[in-house]
Length: 136
Length: 139
Image 1 (cartoon, chains in turn green, cyan):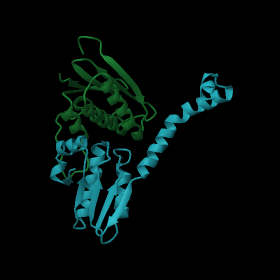
Image 2 (cartoon, helix red, strand yellow):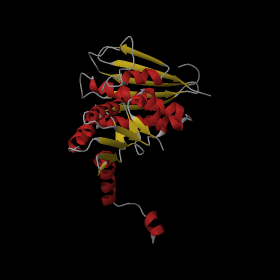
Image 3 (tube, helix red, strand yellow):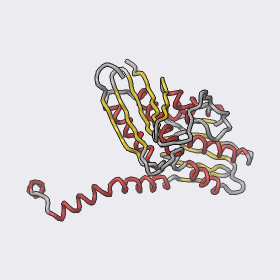
Image 4 (cartoon, chains in turn purple, blue):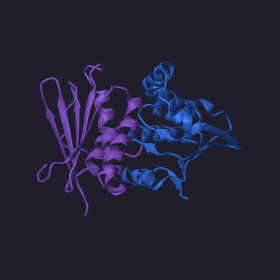
């Protein structure tokens, strides 16, 4: 992110799927408080939910929390999700599965509602960075 | 009397109670949320089962939701109406549960309808082409 220092929100999310909706809603409220509209905050909430679900389902250590960070500047919203997955590889190509398939839509939703997606592997932790340009 | 009570400092006992409430409040909210989930309603009208008061359908409760409805269907009940008018949260796992239930009712020669989804839920259904699979009844 460039320009003015963005407003930041941070949360350590326990590895519990039940905690995800509340955390994502809190992130959305933060974005609304920064002046973001529903067309910006709702997709970010959805992307955050899908990313958190993925991070929890693939974590190598359920005792370690998932790190959530939301940065909001006048130009851009950035979501950072730090997970502890060992075996998860971000697919090179993500497509919507057949309508009859019961799984496999999460990553598609993330790339559909966000403008850019970047997943970096680190030592013991990985970071998923999702960005969305703000509308005027 | 009320204004006099507000101006007085709280007692040690009240302080202990306040600290206890602050500590348990997040757990209380989760418990209330679980109760709220279990408050989903299921009604039967002829051969149609109608599910309402679905507030959240996500990774945490999607499998339970699917199994609860499957177990509730008895012989002769083949159609399923799921009222999404109160649904504020739906993710890809929730969609998966709806797809699974659609297969269940199709196996009974019935249909699944999604009723009155909120605009954000409707957008999600269209984005994932679920509007090609389900009959969606809008407001």
